[in-house]
Length: 112
Image (cartoon, rainbow, N blue to C red):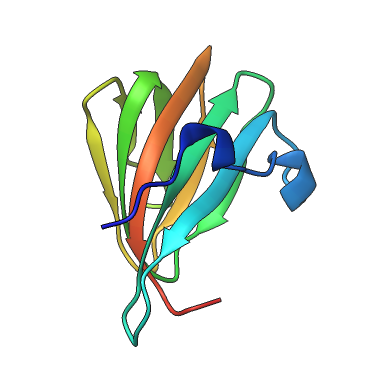
């Protein structure tokens, strides 16, 4: 078992990641091995949207606020606290919010 105290969780801003939107996104922990699981936080404020192409599987649960998420297949959803998104390898997603949103994600992708 492992505990990561809240004050030790450091998540980069979206701008630090080269994304022209206000918020944060970052991995907290990744398991070892061939098919590692990764978890982290995603927060976005209402100052811009951005596109992301998934090359792995991910689950994202909305904790606070809301996200408007659309894909290249013309699907559009508004996720609110407690809602769970499943992104599949190959999905092309646009993230947006009218206010702010905070989510926790778990993904399975190759070690970085």
